[in-house]
Each structure stands twice: as structure tokens, then as C-alpha cells.
Image 1 (spheres, one colour):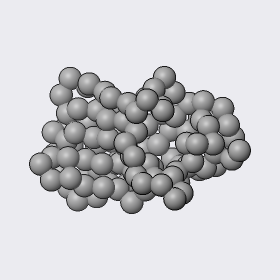
Image 2 (cartoon, rainbow, N blue to C red):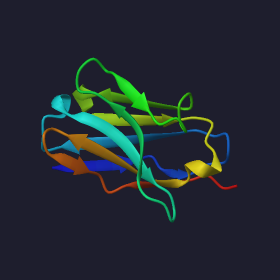
Image 3 (cartoon, rainbow, N blue to C red):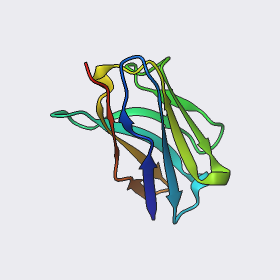
Length: 114
């Protein structure tokens, strides 16, 4: 099983980034998927999720209206579109997949300078 994130980087406040997480080794379409992040000196926190059926999404209050999670089952990929980025969004972002067993990616760094 592999979850590989990409798309992180350095972006100015107000800018946008699109994170991708490509999976292999399990039935992607059956997986509940989510993004989490860990800011420096803080615990890992939930960012957004998308269910395996119905495309139902859920967001942390801190990112509602700015971030959008989506999935492409044909490409085994989950995305996180991040708009209007703020310095407090600086963190390592991780994707997570659950098909009865949970898997984590290795993370991708997002930096928004103040």
C-alpha cells in the first residue's frame, strides 16, 4: 500500500495550491479519504474528508469556504484545492485512507509566510 502526496510548496498569503495524493495497493473507490495537517509544535488535525459513496464532504471550520476536497477514482487520486491561503495554514499535509485498515501518506510541506 502506498499513498504519495505532492503539490506542496511555498506560496504567498492569498495564493493557492493544489495537493494530490495518489494511492496504490488497495481498492481506492471503496476508501474513505481525508486530509490532515500538522503545524509546527502542534498536534495533527483534521482538514477535510470525502466519503467513498455519495461524494459527501466535510471540512474543518478553519478551512471552510477556502479548501475543497475531491476524488478521482479512475486515477486513484484525492485532491485538496487550497485557496486564499493564510500563514496559519503552514503545516505538513497528510492524506489518509480507510478501507477497514487505515493508511497514511508521508506528507507534503505547505508554507505560507507571514
